[in-house]
Length: 366
Image (cartoon, rainbow, N blue to C red; front, top):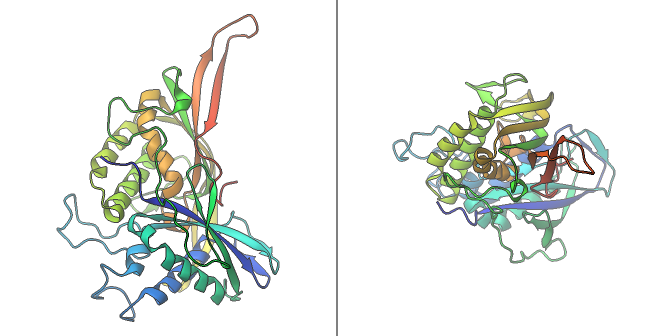
């Protein structure tokens, strides 16, 4: 399976409000709605009132990015799909209701996957228009000032600005650090685990509500398991790579990783967070919730070495319900559990060494 490099890119958008703007508790729904409406307006060629039945539905930039149609029945080797994940993740500003004053700046991120990376110019144009038309019901006009490509280390590279509105060349790919996603009995472990004993841990710091579901119902605290997390994330990753990047073979690897996750144990320091959004489709307010906090997975170092690349990718792809609006965002750390040996200047004790696997590259990280 060829996974180096992966067509995944994170972009940071910097905008400035012209008037005071009241941001809701969670702005992901707000920004996604504005983005989708503007993208459809600039991309739609037929001007049909809805996408189903449109002769261009399989090739239209809007549907391929924002409202991905499932493949025709019988066309996929594994199964028929009623829906597939979309090729973007909108990461809003840090959660928390607040009021921005006129001329204040704010940032948000957009992760593009597969062929969506080829439509970046259109995406920027659509977001620029969406912001200019105004945010929230007050329609506060907002100017898009700059767009940066954020690399895997969290370094921002300017690629577009209002003064120079021509895209600069950049490498819109993501390379896994010293790891392989192949279902191999000898995966490359994270460097933080070199010399570790058999036990190791992975720590997720969840900063936007993670909503895992079973049979259409959300899993609450006490119902969450490592398998539920890994199965959800692995399936999402496999579908994104298959349908939007043209990389097959991820399905079998996802099944293998899910099976491995059944041996993991965990420690949870989570709390439930509810937030309300307005659904323009359903014409009503909806309450969504998910967990925030820390979730540590424990297991054999060799097993976690196979699982951790999927969790590493999840820092870009997110996990769970409504991931496209930025829910299920987290940062990942590897923890080396190793018993310290007695010496003249130390006493016998269990020590843990924690090293972050990603710099603070997300606007939603705390």
